[in-house]
Image (tube, rainbow, N blue to C red; front, side):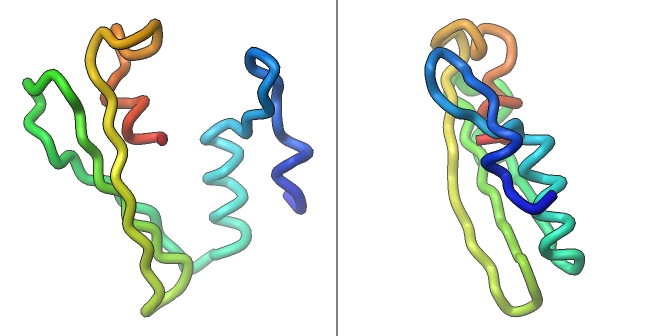
Length: 87
C-alpha cells in the first residue's frame, strides 16, 4: 500500500481512510512498530477516554488521547468505546 490517499472513501463530502487501511499501512511501513491503546476512564463513565501509544520504531514513541461520549450522535449510541479507540 503505497499511498493512503488512494484508499480514501467519501463520507458526507469528506475524504476518510478507514482504520483498517491505516493500520495495514502502518504495519507495512513500520514492521517493527507497535500501536497500543489503554482505557483511561472507567467502563461505566459517560465519557470514554482512550490513551493511544504509537511506536514506529524502537526509542521513538508518540502518545495521544481521544474521548467519546455515550449517546452523543449516531455512532456513539452503541460504539463510543470503539469510536474513541479508533480515533
